[in-house]
Every structure is written in C-alpha cells, then in structure tokens.
Length: 245
Image (cartoon, rainbow, N blue to C red; front, side, top):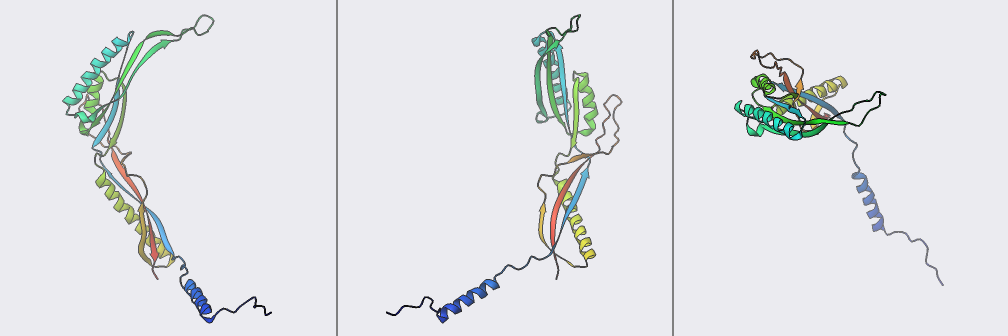
C-alpha cells in the first residue's frame, strides 16, 4: 500500500496569488502622519452694555400674616405701576421670589438658658426682577423704587441685549490670533506654514461678561449713581496647519 505524502507543494497559481496579496497589503499600509502646527487663538470684542437686569425686594413685617401681606401687596403694586410708567414693558417685569416667614425671638432666663421661641410676627418678601433697556434711566428707576417701598436687594447685571455681532467680531479676532501664532511658530522652526487642516471653536455659547471700566454719566442729583462700564465677549478657537513640503 502506498501512503500519500503528508505535505503537498502548493500549485504555482496559489503561490502567485499569495505573493500578490502580500504585495497589495504592503502597498496599502497607512502612511506616517504628516507633521502639523496646532495653536489656540483667543479673540475678544467689547461694547457698552445696553441692558441692565436688576433684582430688588419689598419686605414687610407685621404681627399678623394677613396684615404683612396686605402691606407688601400695596407697596409692590406701586413699584410695578412706576416701572410701567417709566416705559418698562410687561415682558421685562418678572416676579422672581416670594416668601412668608414667621419671626421668632429666643429669650433667655436669668441662668442664661434659652427659653422656647416666641412668635413675634410675620415677614413677607416679594422679589421683582426688571430688565431695563434704557441704561441712562437706571439711577432714577432705582431711586424711585426705594421711595415706593423697595427695601432689600439691588443686584445689578449689565449685558448686551443682542450679542451676536459682538460674538462674530470676537471669532474673527480669535482666528487672526491663531494664525499669527502659527506663523510665528513656523518661522521659528524654519518651516513653511501650509493650509488649514482643522479648525474648531471651543464649546459653549459666547456670552457677554462685564469688564471693570468706569463710564461717567450725567444724572440727576437725586438718582442713584451708576457706572455701566463695558461688556466683553471672548471666543477661543483651535486650529491646525499643515507644514508645506
């Protein structure tokens, strides 16, 4: 009986196909990454704010909750009426807080021990947030609000009503800043800057932020002095450039 050989030589066609496959695999190998210059550019644009957001409260205190609420309602109604008389639209007036809280005292006896708390009355606080679009009237509005019953709060935030154009200017400045950095790096390295291969703006919607700069205004003697300063939008962009051959 004749035994078949354990190993048979591959046909010539199979050897040729294997060689072509190996050559094709070598030909499709990933090329090495091209060197790039990557930079981050920052741009800023600023403008005088044209919007002020003010929050203030009317706080009243009486022995009975009903009496405290009635007094608070009357004072806040006058404030709202005055705001509307100043030309502030309904959409720019918003109640942002309301609370009724009991008030206690904690007396101590002769031995210095604290006795049970005693109810002395009720406090009502109504907070109003106002968007003021005429900055030159801000001081007068604050002064009148206090006269009519506002006795707490006064936080002010200055902003830009429509910051889109400011953001566009900041983006242009950021790209120019990034390109200037890339040219400097290329010149220092003795290479030639190529085309832009990647560009992106850092996440987050650009919003105007207040800047510490005083702006003088002529206001009536009885109004609250206000300095609006400037609001600025800052944008960061990341850019990558080819290095030209």
